[in-house]
Amino acid sequence: MSYSKNEIIESISSLEQLILYRDFTKNDLLAKIKTQLLVQGSEDKFSFSQIINELVEFNEKLGLKGDIFKNYLKGIFINDQNSFSLTAEKNTIAKNSSLYQLAYNDIEVIRQVLKINFSDLIKAFNLKNYSFLASYQAQTINNKNLKMYNYIFDNQSKLEDCLKNINNFYQKFGTALLNQSSAFYWKNSALKLVKNPDKIRFEQIIAYQKQQDKLINNTKSFLNDKKAHNVLLYGDSGTGKSSSVKALLNEFQDQGLRLIEINSSQIKELSEIMEYLSQRGLYFIIFMDDLSFEEFETDYKDLKAIMEGGIESKPDNVLFYATSNRRHLVREKWQDRKSEVHKNDILNEKLSLAERFGLTLMYNNPDQEKYLKIVREIAAQEDIDIEASLLEDKALKWSKWHNGRSGRTARQFIDQLLKLK
Image 1 (cartoon, rainbow, N blue to C red):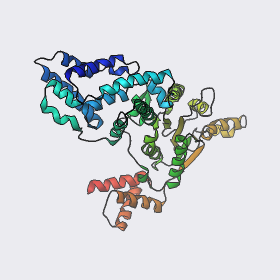
Image 2 (cartoon, one colour; image 1 turned 90 degrees about the horizontal axis):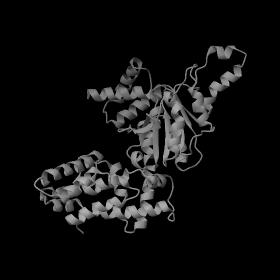
Image 3 (cartoon, one colour; image 1 turned 180 degrees about the vertical axis):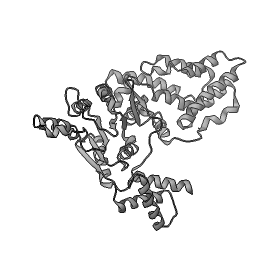
Image 4 (tube, rainbow, N blue to C red; image 1 turned 180 degrees about the horizontal axis):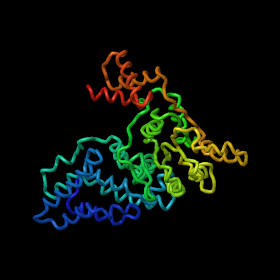
């Protein structure tokens, strides 16, 4: 089925009926298409070139392929945050609810607009030279985005099936900002996305299998709505504590896991963060890297209060994962141990924060044998062809001159070899 110029105008105009998905009515590009079709004249080719430019830039930025106009329309839909999308992110919407009926009416209209092909626009503007863009292919395909964009409005003939699929989409990928990345940070009372999250995988973190297994199993329980613990990963620098948390994200982001990194200065904002996350679906790890407190700092009390479930407790879809070089996160003063007066109270208060992490994982620097094992495995991953004895000899010398034996030192040594290839 193809659409004529008048049918395209009528279809885009029908978007004004939308109640929930109002982003369609505010979209400048759709308004531009409608205006140009209504007032076609001598500048049509120039105007349509601007429209094509915006469509191409959108598809290239997201790494998509297929009909560039349909992809653009899906993008408006996916990023429209409204009462239905936010509720569907957390729950399956009941068919007898008013919200379901409103969404039903909106999506019926949107589905009709999505029947417009880019080739229909080409015919409407009488520009045959751009027909190849009807099946666009971005220079670099983003498989995550492609999977997300292919998830909705495809292969559902019944409107009820389409709505069910959309509800599942929101629970799987989230709405608006939450489907644009898997990693975030908090700034100026708002969630901000990390555009290029670390892509590290567990197979790249060598020699800490027991710790990884416990971390993975705890996170799986969390994602399956079972009992799960806040986690403290502590130990020597460069052993893969932070990398292990980031690897979780790459393992489970398709199951709704999201990571929000905060620093210790933002602990006083945790109440605000918890309030925001309690209104969202998906699953969130609040990640605090290199967490520790000096004896004069008191922010740890705010963190402890939220973790232990006071008046302002954390939502069920939130866990705290922290890394530290210390097992006990608050530094003790010698006076705390010397003074007999209130000695136990002071020490217990300072040690109690670490106890709020139900799972504690220790990452020690590897011994020589384990260090060399890490070096060999990273070298194999990077296809470095060098005699084993020579590799090990160089690796040991490197560790003596560069911060001792650790996974990070091994990685830096291999990176240096790669530079010299």
